[in-house]
Length: 142
Image (cartoon, rainbow, N blue to C red):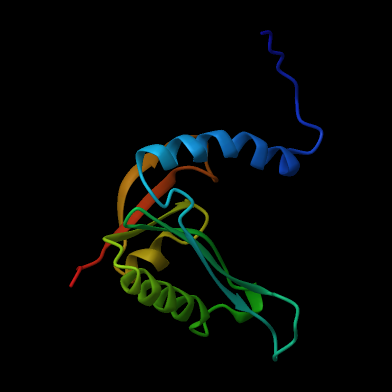
């Protein structure tokens, strides 16, 4: 059998065919390999359009926060803190042991630190983008 490597014309469409065999393998070793997605949306004055929000994935006792977005004009009003509070409530409901995320130097490290997150890893590179911080918050499990 021969194989070739090529750039995907549509990387989004290529994701599932690439992910499926790994997911199947993971499922043979550890159950619930797909995890549980969680999302909160933020809209302006009840409009149906999503202006921001939070997306996370709970997997094997870990709660990964993949996206947190608050529109610039809405920052400083507590929306980010409330998104994170509700995400933490969900993580606890799912009995996750910790929450984790990553953020770049120009983004929100101080915000996450105020919420109890600590850096557990760092990738360095050229400023102003780097360093990239990997942060976690340990959750007490009842």
